[in-house]
Every structure is written in structure tokens, then in C-alpha cells.
Image (cartoon, rainbow, N blue to C red; front, top):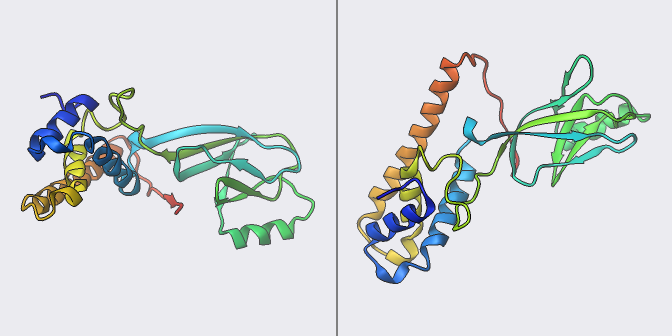
Length: 209
């Protein structure tokens, strides 16, 4: 059984559940497991880069639609400037200190916007490195960033999400434990790969609720 594709994953979940009446619910189990992975995983396979351009006198740019957390925001001046994260209150204080605007040095993430301070007075490129949501699995999207190498985390995650239908199934604690172990194993492998690749500095992740 091929667990590295959406159809194979669905077949495996149905086989594990042993319930012919849940075929229509299995896509929802997978989607719920995916939502949980988006909350719990922050690995390099989820890193993306998005480019934007500031507008003179405009202090915001839109976040990418799949944004989860920021890694770095770089102002593409010469030399480049790495912007520092601020709370919304701190950002407003920075703007108040430079009422005429200037070259951005700070940013805050508010809703669907990235707010800059000082407010830029020139058109300048921005490069955002961030964690993005996993590409959703579906009939039209057979695989994504992590399924081929980590099918177990999807399998056990979906089985756990079947709990409302399975009620007191004695297998649920085991599946939950296997899911947690798979998540930790993925994080551990990602950390080891990052270390071996020479990434010695501490990662600073910025979570947005």
C-alpha cells in the first residue's frame, strides 16, 4: 500500500479503521490532522520566501495567504537591512518617534498585514522568509511537502481525528502516542539536518495566533 499519495493514504486509513461507513469522513480526518500539523510543525520543508515592494507613505504590506510564522524580514537596500520585530505598541511608538517617516527598521504583524516603522518614504523591496501552511492534500493534490517522507504522521493524525466516530476505541491512545512520536521525530530530524548543514545560530521563530 502506497502511503505517499492522497489516495493511498485514504486507503490505509480506511484499512486501519476497519469501518466501511466512514469513507466519506476520511477526507475530513486528513484535513483536521493537517490543521494540527500546521499548528505544531515548524520545519525547513515549510519554509518559503515571499517578495514585496513598499510604497512611499504606505506603512503596510500584505502577508502571504499561507503565512504561519515569520523567520526574517529583510529590506533590500544596499547593504540589506534585517528588520526587527516589535509589538504593535512598540511599533506605534517607533512611528511616533519618526513622524515624517524614513527607512524602515522595525515591523509588527497585525492581522493580515505587516506594519513597518518608520513608514517608508521610498519604493524598496522586501524579502520575507516564513513558515507557510502545508499544501493541502486532496484529489487534485496527491502529495505535499512532508507526506512522501513522513506518511506515518498523516496516518496516525487522521486516525486520532476519527475519535468522535470511534468513541471508546481502545486503539486511540496508541494512535495518539504514535502521532506525537512522529511529530517529535520529524522535529528532531530537521534539527539534526540543520546542524549538519552548518546552521549553528539559534532559530528565532515568530508565532502569530
